[in-house]
Image (cartoon, rainbow, N blue to C red; front, side, top):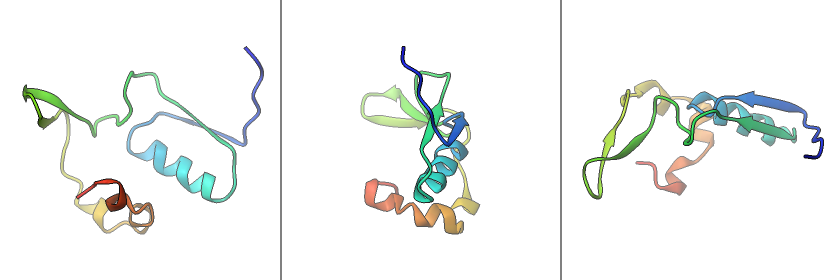
Length: 83
């Protein structure tokens, strides 16, 4: 395995890790995000649990302050399907 040099390492791909990584990348930092779980999202994840094609929130699901966050709005997540 080769040695990689980065400007920042973000530990965890829950909701805050990718936001931090994105902000650093916007500032032209080279960023590495590390996550121990198979899927990212932390406590903000969903899966087909109840029935096929029916997404169920696995953990917490209500984040009203995120909608008012200038950082989150700046990610333009609606362009990627978030509603």
